[in-house]
Image (cartoon, rainbow, N blue to C red; front, side, top):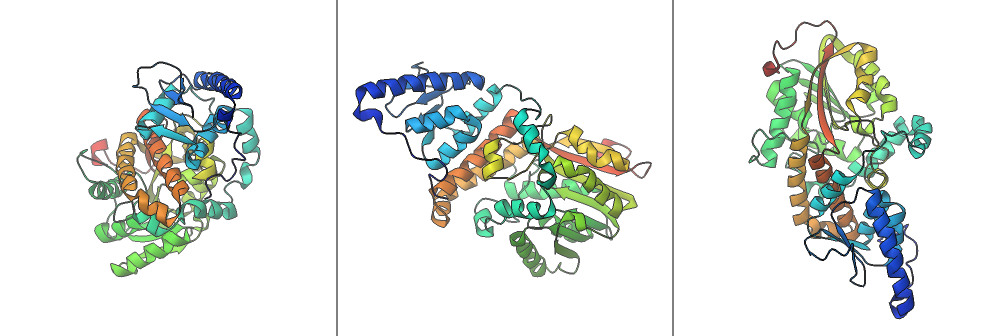
Length: 415
């Protein structure tokens, strides 16, 4: 993406006129001081293009954000949630030091949001019905997941698992932790040979292939990303599992048949709360009387939309749900929730691995696309790491079954 798309012309260079420079510096101090107060006064420092520090604390130890022109100051002060990322991507804002650490500092200072009921969000919700319709859902998924398999291969594990890993020990490497996550899911679902499994939103197919190969299941896996489906089908063919795993390029709403288990890992964030009852009815339609299910999703402590930069530039119209919102899937259809586990710190650890790998591959990303794309994805991964470290984001695994089914684990250790 061109570095300055959507940012407009820059302000004139005031350094040629000392009086104007003084006026611009004074305005910048006022704007940035007020902006800092609005986001909870995190302990950081702005550095202007002329070297001026705001606030002037002088200890040299604070994380630093460098603003390269007055136009960047105006944009950042006007809408920090959106413009921080856009100015960073354009190279008009730089972070000196640990990017993820600075973002975690900001997240921890932010006042609690209003739970998504402000006027702007209400206006967005007025149009919610079309936000994740089948046609819009495909456009949204294409924006992110069809970015190119070669791009994701640079920083994901060898099986291309793009969801939270599970680290029984923190020293475990990413490949082993992703295998451990898939075993955890299969264990919670109590999969056994011959089970028929439906997977909604299967990514590049690693979990579907794992369930078939190691647990003897027969799997139908749905996804609307053409790039991911092509990769998954080829992987199934290469390992000889194409007869036991069927990868279907279609919307989850079109699932049909009867299955022993339903699983969705990393899809719910893209469904939208307004469609949760519809998803519950789909599960109710296809799950056998003895069936059980698991939904693994990024979430929030309370209903709240993604920040505007991430929603605009990374995950269009995505919405990580709170647990109360997730209950709209289960309650209308009479499902019983058996277990809820929060793997937030495991996702932070996963993101540490992804960000480290991405940093190594930054030069390749710049060659594949351009520096602005590399900065966008570096900020996204660092921001996600900060969000999970700070508790701004959660990672829920919810296990459920039909109401009244007594064939459930006697203790939690049996999951």
